[in-house]
Length: 90
Image 1: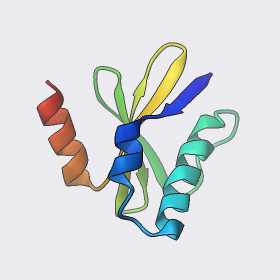
Image 2 (image 1 turned 30 degrees about the vertical axis):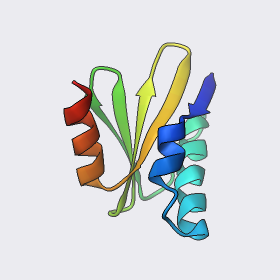
Image 3 (image 1 turned 180 degrees about the vertical axis):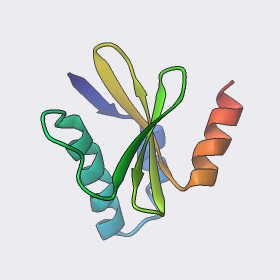
Image 4 (image 1 turned 60 degrees about the vertical axis):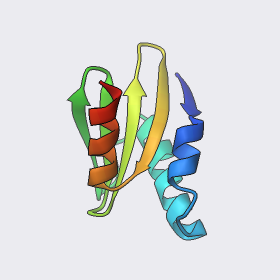
């Protein structure tokens, strides 16, 4: 399966510390390894259409689009930033 970190994803995590960026990207990579179970503290939720969310603990969310043959990581942030993105994308 192909995956891509969109420029919007990179912009959304730009202000985070190096450690926080690494944690978010490692959550994305852990999700991509579908042969294993998701690590503790990571939740997966279907949002709308082909949009999904990975929850990394209580603070961070990762919005991605799951298509038949690819996954596009779109946004990393908190609950409100994900909600705003979905509201504005319609």
